Every structure is written in C-alpha cells, then in structure tokens.
Length: 411
Ligand SMILES: Cc1cc2nc3c(=O)[nH]c(=O)nc-3n(C[C@H](O)[C@H](O)[C@H](O)COP(=O)(O)OP(=O)(O)OC[C@H]3O[C@@H](n4cnc5c(N)ncnc54)[C@H](O)[C@@H]3O)c2cc1C
Image (cartoon, rainbow, N blue to C red; front, side):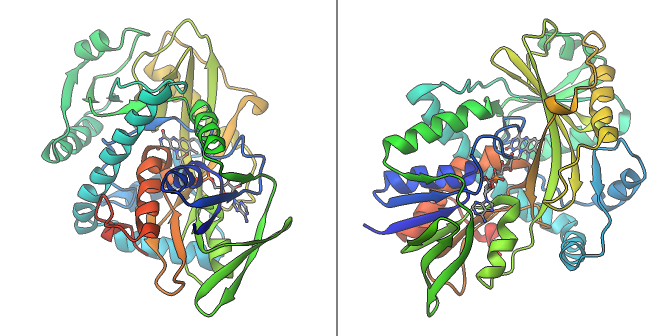
C-alpha cells in the first residue's frame, strides 16, 4: 500500500491521517512540536455551519482600518515592510467583494455540513471530547450590529439553516447560565461545539489504533524529488520515503511550500484564549459577543473565552495585553454578573490561525507536483472543517470523486 507522509500534526493533519489510514494507506505524521499545545488545542471549539461568510467580505477593509487605531480592537494587521504581507493584503482587497462572498457561501456551507456529520460519527463512537449541539448565539448591543446579524441570518436561511431572531427577553430565557446585557441575538441552531484538547487526545488515540506513525519533535526541512514527484521527506531526524505528501503545516505552510516551489499565501492570525475552571457563573450556550468579536464556549465544566485576530508572523509570540484587556472588557460588558479578571500571562494561550487572503481554505492536489496535496489556510474554521478536509484529502489521493465540490478550495 502507498506510504503517505503528512507534514503537520495539527487538527487538519491528524484528521487527514485518520481517513487515509481508514482507507488502508500506510500513514506517517511529522510535527516539529510535542503536539500538545498548538492552534488546534486552545481554540474556541466551535463547529460552525453558521459561518458562511469569509473574512474577505465587503466593508471589512474599512472596518479593519478603523480597528487598526484602537489598541483593544479585535482585528489588527501588524505593519511591516514584507513582500508576503503586501501580496496577502492585495489579494485580500481583491476578494473583499460581494461576488466572492456569493461563491464562497455555498462552498463553505457544504464543507461545514459534511464536517458536522463526521463529528457526529466520532461522537457516536466515543464522545470523550464533550461534543454538544446547542447552537450558536450571536449576541449584540447596537442597532447597527443587529441589522448586520439579521442580514447574515437571512443569508444562512437561504442556504437552509435554521435561524431564530431573539429579543432581549428571549435571549435571557435561552441563556440561563448567567445574566446577559444585550439588545438581542441571533440563534443558529445548526452549530455545535466540543472541547478541543479532548478531541485531539481522542483522534491521536484513534491514529495509534490505526497504526499511524506519529513523529513528534521532527521538523521537516526539505523534500527530495524525481522529476515532478516527491520521493522523500527530509527531516532533522532523518529521511523518510513517501509515495504521497500532504502539506498541512498551518501557518508554517508557506515556508515549506517555498521548498516545493509552490506559492501559497497564508499568514498567521494570532488569537488568544483563556479557560476558567468550575466557574459558578457560566454561560450555557456557545456565543459570539459581536461588538468585541469574543467567542464564549462552555466545555464540560469549564468555560473558554477567545478572540482577537492580529495578522502577524510566526515569530511574534508576545501576549498583547491591550488586546487581551479588550476581550476581558467585552466579557464583563455582556455578562455583568461574571466580572472576569484579566488572566495572568501564564494562563493565557495564543495560537496562529492560518489565514488565506480569500478567507477560503486550500484543499487541493498541486498543479505541478503530482503526489502533493495541500490542506491548509482554514483560518478561524480549522476545527470546524477538519474532518471534512481529512475526508476530501483522502478522496483526492484515492482518485475518487470528492464528497463536496472543491472548486473554491483550489489555489
Ligand atoms: C483564539 C482562537 C480561537 C479559535 N476558535 C475556533 C473555533 O471555535 N472553531 C474553529 O473551527 N476554529 C477555531 N480556531 C481556528 C483553528 O484553531 C485553526 O484553524 C486550526 O487549529 C488550524 O489547524 P491546522 O492543523 O491547519 O494548523 P496547526 O494546528 O497550527 O497545525 C500545524 C502543525 O504543523 C506543524 N509544523 C509546522 N511547520 C512544520 C515543519 N517544518 N515540520 C514539522 N511540523 C511542522 C506545527 O508544529 C503544527 O503542529 C481558532 C483559533 C484561535 C487562535
């Protein structure tokens, strides 16, 4: 059977490994880290068929410019003279229009729905990762955001999603975990959530059962070729033969893509989260506090808050306290009875979302290298879209018709 080498052991690499091993391939995963704390671990754990509008959308450039001058804002581009950032910015500008959004919406919707079904299969097998279907509440305070949320809800309904538009009193009746200070909310009943660290543990155990070889602390440095085919993966721990290679290195994908002479525009969107254990005041329904773009997810007995998007570089590992303060202020404004304190730096997690300028993930066979499949750029939806991505990667490698149309996920 063919040997598959997967570069990157985040949720995209591991879900790809799972479906490839189930298909009967001999799979190895290579990761430079201990595989216990990257972007796929501390995220908000939301599975979001509701998120059908990509980050590149009309109005985003103007909003982003306004946020640039606010130290606590949820979105920020770290200014640098760098050609990758310039190219990314230009591509983002080109995609931030309604015709792109119109094409992106059904593609994301189909991928999301497939992923949710696959999560349901995993949960039926062994729900050790606290998968729950409580939907997602978009909570807001201002009339402007209320209008935007209503419009987005109607777009989602157009694709067949079930959406409720709630008054302040209806929000209070649904969210019984703590008091909410909002003017209303939109409830997407399609959405689900889970505890990411527990899902990662679950999938790694599945991979061991399926005899996947996992190489931790193994940095992929280069590739060997015969013509337009990769033959070996060169790492700091030796060289490994491969019949097929999957590039799933998240925010680091462009560095490896350069070694392959493939151009992928992906920049890290740094975000933060912190998790309160056994808090007595605790929202019961996963929510997004819209004005501050803060994600709130109950996870078993814990509650996780996440937010901010700083477009930066992977060397930027500093915690920006201004932006963290922005998250805390938003939580306390929306949940007045929680009064969350600013978390200590050691209790603050950060991760790099792999962001493409189009806001669409890349899931495709490379055009030149015949045995290379790319699976990266999932930005704020990597957890949500991982099982479907893994399934599609497997279908691509097996030469089968893919479960969803991948036209929008090509380079
Ligand atoms: C605050 C926050 C909240 C989020 N909330 C959600 C959410 O609610 N729902 C959702 O769907 N998504 C969410 N996300 C996004 C999600 O976490 C990411 O999209 C997802 O984790 C990306 O997975 P990945 O496997 O592509 O990348 P990663 O998890 O970054 O994995 C890439 C791996 O590649 C490895 N690697 C890189 N270079 C090399 C090399 N040279 N050799 C070997 N290994 C290498 C890295 O060590 C890493 O482990 C959130 C993100 C953040 C930051």
